[in-house]
Structure formats: C-alpha cells, structure tokens
Amino acid sequence: MTLYRIYRLIQDVRRNSCKCCIDIYYTKRIPRIFINQRFSRTYASNISTNQYKDSSWYSFIKQQKWSIPVGVGVSLLTVLQWRHLKKYPNTTEDNNVYDSINIFVVKCYYFLPFRIISRIWGWIASLELPVRLRPILYGFYAKTFDANLDEIDLDLSAFPSLVDFFVRPLKCDARPIDQNTNIVSPSDGKVLYFGPVTSCYVQQVKGVTYNLKHFLVYLAPGDYHRFHSPTDWEIEFRRHFQGKLLSVNPKVAQYLPDLFSLNERVIYIGKWAGGFMAYTAVGATNVGSIKVYCDKDLHTNTIKWPEAKHWKDASLGCTHLNKGELFGEFRMGSTVVLLFEAPKDFEFCLNVGQTIKMGQGLSECAVGEAKKQYTHSL
Image (cartoon, rainbow, N blue to C red; front, top):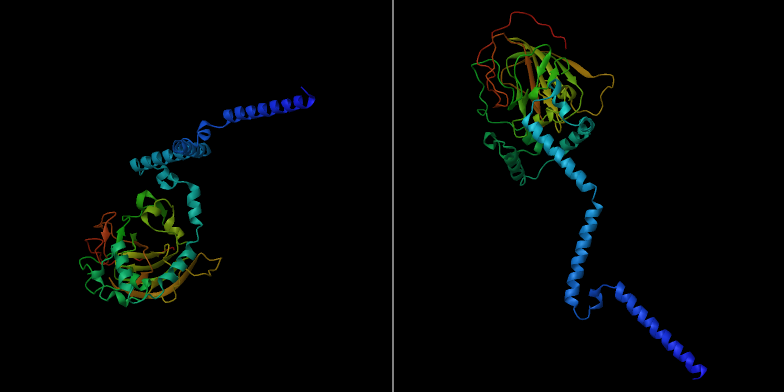
C-alpha cells in the first residue's frame, strides 16, 4: 500500500465519521415530527399548531402573572364594598356619605372644566336644526327622557333649536293652579327634601346637611324647564353667587358635600303672606344660562367675574309676582330651592321622592297675612 492510498483511506474514514456524527446530532436535537414530516405531514402539522397555541397561551398567562391576581383582588373588593353600601346605605360617620368614596376622586371631579363644557353644550344646543329633522330628534329626546309631547301647543317643527325645545311653553290648561292653598310648586320635578329648618341647617337627600348661611325641587331633563312664582309675593333684591356648574343629579349630590353652596345660584329675597321668602335657582352642568324675566340684568355663566367679589347684589324695588306667574327658565334640568317663613301649624302634603307638577299645592292649609315685620341678614 502506497503512501497515496493510505492518505485517501484516512480521508474517507474522516468523511464518513463526520457524516455519522452530524446525523446523530440532528437526530437528537430535531423533534421527531420534523424528521418524519415527508411521511406524515398532516399529523405533524396538527401537533405543531396545538403546541404553538399552548405555548402562546402559556406565554400570555406568564406575562399577566401579576395583573390577573391584582385585577381579581380589586374586583372582589369592589363587589364587597358595593354589597356593604347596598345593605347599609345610611351608615356613615357624622351623617356624611362623603367618606364612603375616594376623596381623591371627588377632588378631581371638582376641577373638571364644567363651565367650558356647559358653554360648548349651550352653543351646540342653540344651533338651528333642519326642519325635517326636528320632529325626529325631539321625538327621540321625549321618548328617552319621558317628556309628554301632548302638553305642547305648538308643532315640533316650530322649535328651531334644542334650547327652544327645552324651554317649550305648554298649553294653558296643562298646569292648573291649586286655588285651595296660597303656596304651590314652582316647577315640575322631584321633591328631594321638605320640612322645617333648625339651627341654621337644612337637610338634603341621603342625610347630607347644608349650612343655611352658605347656601329643593329637582328638574330632570324631561321635565318642563320653566319655573313659576310659588305664591303671591314681592321681590326686594337679588343676590347672584358665582360658582361651579357641578351636576345636581340626586345620585351625584349625595356624594358631594355643600353642593348647592358650590354651584352658581341666583337667590331672590322677598316676602309673602307668611313672612320671609327666598327663591333660589341653582345652576348645574350644561345649564349655562338661567333666565329670569323680571331681571333683565342677570347674566349667568359669564367668562369674566371680579376676583374680589363672591356675589353681586341688585335691587329690584318691590317687584310683585302672582301665584303661578311665569318667573324664569333653565336651559336644561336643575334645582329650585324654596326657603320661606310659615306659621307653626303649617304642614306639607308631600312625600320625599314624589314627582310633582307646577301649580300643585305644597300644603293643604291657607296661610294668613303675617302681621310681624322681618329682617334678613343675607
């Protein structure tokens, strides 16, 4: 055997040995499903897909290993808190449900730009609508908020904008005035609270109390949005408080202390047969305008306001209003607060949460003319 043949033999041995090692290595490393792919492609493909899905689901669970238990825990706490509030709705410390929710959330709610939102909504609602669309849009609104269209004397197409539909006039006989008493409801709405005032505090829905010095029929969006005079009385002056425009919905009011002393409001002070009378119209979200017909100088939700002044006073002389006479209008739902002096035997004929109409009697007894003089300290 020559040297050349020995060299060729060594090369052949090396080549065969390397191929054998490579076959063994890939046989160990590559899964069997890929090696037998040419013979059982369908079976191998199914197994590969299932394994891929299982792997993806496992990866997703692994990535969410902290968020899932945290989410479950927060949801459990929320359900437990909801069950507690539902079982004990009035169990609050110091007669204040304000402590039952997060203080941070309430503070954030205070700083939302409701004035800007109300101005934008007022601009949108005052846009003139196409005549053909008016009956459709107003009919949808009435169906959504349970507004009674049979009480309207005009055709729906006669209201150019949504604001005009909000303050729509009613038929003459739609709101009869109760003649058996000399004080009636000033507007449509729901009674939030009624009763005597003690120690300069007035109680509001859900047990929340408000200081009388700081300073209730709630008008929902589907109600008649004009308000009237509750009795025969004389207005002496008006006090306009600049404030926020938070929602006065009863569900919101129970969580916001001093809500009616924070919102923009207009108070008319005068006297009636029983003595002192204060008529307050409270602004709210999207109520960008409170219009009073006997007070042409009143402008609400204005951009500019003197920083040094918290309120503005205006004398109205002795403006006389008759019971049921049209007084003003809201540009959407809001709240009317009546505060008046009455005899000790005065009794309301209402229930908390009762829905009432303008002109409905607040008491079954008639109040005689007050003989004593009064002084106000507002």
